[in-house]
Length: 164
Image (tube, rainbow, N blue to C red; front, side):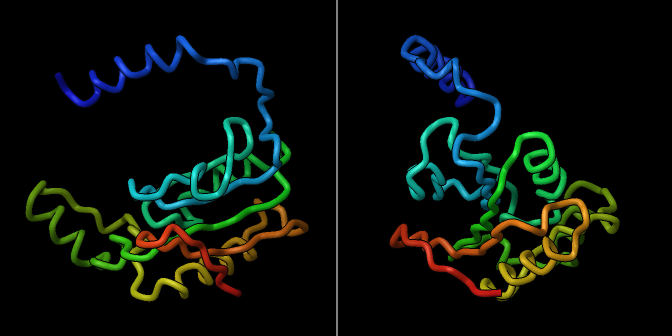
């Protein structure tokens, strides 16, 4: 059985016990989180969230550039009033450069990815600060709300704030 088949089978049990069908569309706690896609991070457990509490936007590195569209929708149509960026220790985005991944794609897949910014970084705290600056520079997102940045430690499960 494939992993996807296992997931679909697991969903049957989840659906049988599901009791959250009446949750409203906007997130109850009016917060949007931008979190790295790393499988070692469970934002709900790490931050004490329940279904329906928050918009959780995940991408490689938890980067603002990839989350902009979702944040604009979350704020404009669904009323979120706070944003937190959550990067993490031991992130894969620290292990490559745009040039190196483009070279690998060219070599292995025979494709040109020069037009894509993969958004790697070499300084974890600076990546958080860069996303906070990029957020503040965007006219598509709200500037009148709290926006904060954090680093999640994959070894301890703790978050620490990174000041802009």
